[in-house]
Length: 261
Image 1 (tube, rainbow, N blue to C red):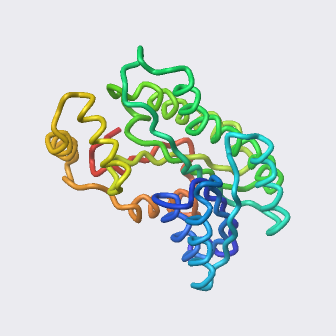
Image 2 (cartoon, rainbow, N blue to C red):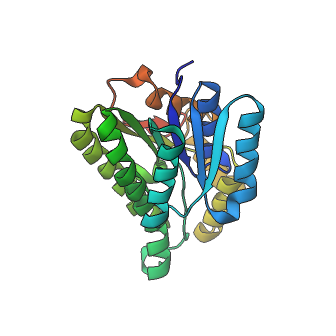
């Protein structure tokens, strides 16, 4: 096992990439704190029950991680329950509007920045205080293509995801002397219904057929396929575990070659 006796908080773990990461970490021996919004509570409970039924350890905490008070309550509950926090995964996300910059409303901008950047800041701020006392820890955040290149109709998302990379590098430099690592995963195209819905909206906004847009995206991906949730989870496991003990401040592309450093 790669994470024996570790305690991992996975934010945005009711479904998708976050749920896959929670399951993978549990299989590798970690106790899991699943965190998501109230509206995701049924799915969140299902993931927790699944992990526990398979012999793992998991609790579900409903929290809005854009709210500092709720974030601190979540951190306090984790420490009360298990005494430490070894891993934080920031997997919550909001893609936001598919419109040109001049058409983004202030409310849309604020919402996207709140979920994709402010929430990460609040969770990291709270967990770093615990990890610094331990002198150990790993923070893994999920970015994406929007965090590595500008994208038409994705102004707010790109701003948030690029900001995430800067925040991560800053934390890596500040927290490194305390034995804490911070890294980012940048997925490309991921095999999930939400992404196909987004592509359909994007195609409409660009005046293209969905099939043409999807073909164009996959043609830009040398492996010519979508990534699975499990493939992203394996990358998260690498960054959370001692396998990457000398890796920090990095953005790891898991994009089938769509993104290359």
